[in-house]
Length: 563
Ligand SMILES: Cc1cc2nc3c(=O)[nH]c(=O)nc-3n(C[C@H](O)[C@H](O)[C@H](O)COP(=O)(O)OP(=O)(O)OC[C@H]3O[C@@H](n4cnc5c(N)ncnc54)[C@H](O)[C@@H]3O)c2cc1C
Image 1 (cartoon, rainbow, N blue to C red):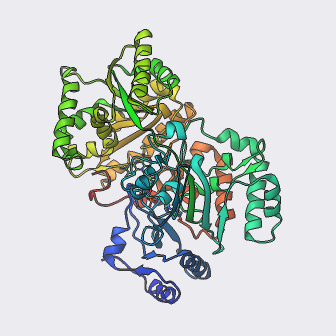
Image 2: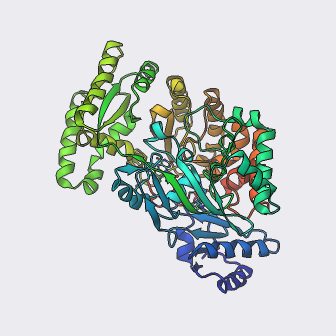
C-alpha cells in the first residue's frame, strides 16, 4: 500500500474547489505514473489533468500559496512519459498534458501550431497532407508527444540536416512560476529594451537573463559542446546573439524538461518530406575504417547516416519475427527473405558495424544517382567496405526496422533484466568516432554491461543501453564509476553526455563535471530566475543530486517502452 499523507489529502480537497480537471489519487493511477522509460521511480501524491491554461495557472498559484507550509509541494509536467532520463516523474503533483492539451490548431507546409499534449503519431499524418514533416522527430514518434519533444530538445534520424528541436522551434507559450502565461519568440534589440523596461515579473525575467548572458558571453559560447547535437544544460548559447541582435527565450524553454514552467502552446517549423528515398548499406569488418568513411559519406550530404553494431544485427536477424505484427504476415515474409538474402553473403561472419546512408529525391532515379555516386567514391578511395544498394523504401525497410528497434532487441535475449539507460546518449564530433568507439567498448566490457550499440553516426551520437538487473545493489554500484570513466573520454572529443535525451535525474548530477562549476552556476541562476521557489520538476537538471537519484532506482523490471 502506498503511503499517503493526510495533510496532502486536505490540501487536495482545497485544490478540488478551484481546479476544473480531474485529480486522481488512487493507488493504481499513482503507480502507473511512477515510471517513465528511465531507471528511476517516484510515486506521485496525485495525478492532475488540467482542463485548460487557466487550470494550470490556478494550480501554480495554489502551489505558491502553500509551498511554505508544504515544502515538498511541486509540479511535474508530463506528456507521454517516454523520457529516458527520469524527468517525467515526480513525488508531488504530476500534470498529465495529454488528456486535454491535445488540439492541433493549424498545419501548413512550413509550420505546425499545436497544443503540447498531441502525439507525434497524430501530427505526422496531418503534416503529410502538406508533404511536410518535422525535422527533429525522434525514433519514439509512435509513442511520444510534441510537448515532450520540445521540453527535451529531442532529435532523430533527420537531425543530421535539421538539428535538435531548438533549431525548429518558432514560438512557445508557457505558464511560469508567477502563475501567468507568457509568449516567447525571437525579438530584436529594440523589442528586448521594451521588455526589459517593464516593471513586472516578465521585465525582470528578460533583464536578468540578458544580463547573465551578456556578462558571461564568451564563457557561455565556449562551454557549448562542439557536437552537432546537444540536449544538456539550458540553451544559453543560442538565447542571445550579439552579432544578429536577436534575443530568443524559446531557446531556454526548449530542453528545460519542465523545470522552468509548463509549456501550453507551440509553433514549430515543418520541412518538406521527400517523395523517394533509398539506402546505401556499408558493412565494416573493422571499426578503424570509420575514420575514412565518415568524412567521405558526410561530403555526399546524405539525408540520414545511421548504424548499428554486430550484436544488434545478430539479434535483429534472430528475432525478426518481432516485426511480424507491425508489418503484416505477407510483408514480413518478403522483408525476411530479403534480409536473409543479404545475410547469406556473410557466410556466418557478421560485419562489425552496419552503416545506413539514406538519400532522398523527387524521383527514384535521382535517389539512385546519389547512392551510386557515394558507392563509386567509396570504391575509388579503395575503402575496405562491402556495400549493397537498397534503392527504394521497400528494400531499405528491414534495416530500418532493426535500427529503430535496436533498444528492444537486447531485452529479448535476457528475461528479468531491464534496459538501463544511463550511458545512453553520448555524442562526440563525428571525426573522432573511430577513436572514441573502442574506448567505450572497453568500459562496457570492464563493467560487464551487455549492451547493443546503435546510433546516429553522422552526428557522432550513440545509444548504448546496457541490460542490467537494476534493482540489484551490486549492479547499481557500477553506475557511478562507469560515469566517472565515460565523462572525460566524451569531453576529450568535444562531446556531450546527451545528444537528445537531456539531463533529468541521470545526467543532472553530472552537469558540473561536464560543463565546469562556473557554467553550472549560470545554469542554476537560470533556474532561480524562472523558478525562485523551486515549484517546477524538482531533482532534475541543476536541482538533481546523485544520492537522491540513486535512492530512487526502480525496484521492478516491468516491461517498458522498449518492448
Ligand atoms: C524506445 C524509445 C526511443 C526513443 N528515441 C528517441 C530519439 O530517437 N530521440 C530522442 O530525442 N528521444 C528519444 N526517446 C526519448 C523520448 O521519447 C523523447 O525525449 C520524447 O520526445 C519525450 O516525449 P514524451 O511526450 O514522452 O515526454 P515525457 O516523457 O512525458 O516528458 C519529457 C520531459 O518533458 C517535460 N514535459 C512534458 N510536457 C511538458 C510541458 N507541456 N511543459 C513543460 N515540460 C513538459 C517533462 O517534465 C519531462 O521532463 C526515446 C524513448 C524511447 C522509450
